[in-house]
Length: 246
Image (cartoon, rainbow, N blue to C red):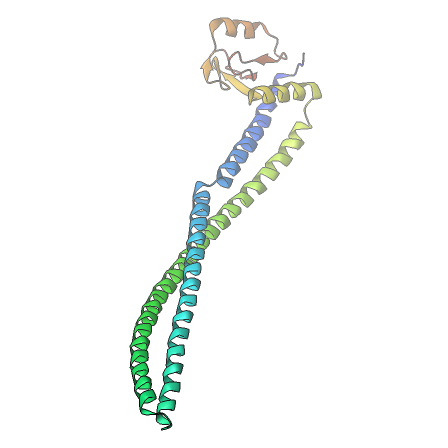
């Protein structure tokens, strides 16, 4: 069983303080990395991207519909132009003249109907393009918010990472100064119970926050000063202060 002078056991509290800080920094980094706002924005960005794609598809569909409507109008106009030129040539008989005039009237009605369709499609295209612009703007806004949160997260993680690296370096330096047997006992306890050492002060274990029973305190009183004693509740090494049993 490892033994250590009271002064050496007291130094375990410094090591525990560093280990506690490292644990806190890791938990802090994990919390910051798992920022629910960023996750929520990721879902919102995905939805906005889907809306933008849908709006773009709608615009493309209506643009094709408009192209067809314009082609239909152009076809009728071309036919009317040919008929009018033929009519104006003066080379048509009375029967053909009557037919051409009737066809031109029919084509004019057809042109009017097609232009109404064309106008309706143009209005729908304007509405679709507005939705597309709004979807793109919303997506860009969400991207901006996410970038802002990610930059803030990364900056915070950078600060935490620097402190963690410094704390781990100091921890390694301090750990190397302990007797290997004592360090092994501490680290075994730390690994098993999550805390390696804590002060025993006025009969209370600062590892568990619990007042030790009279029987446990009596057993500790029997132990030599250089003997390692453990908290019956938390399992950590108890470092006895000068007033530990008072």
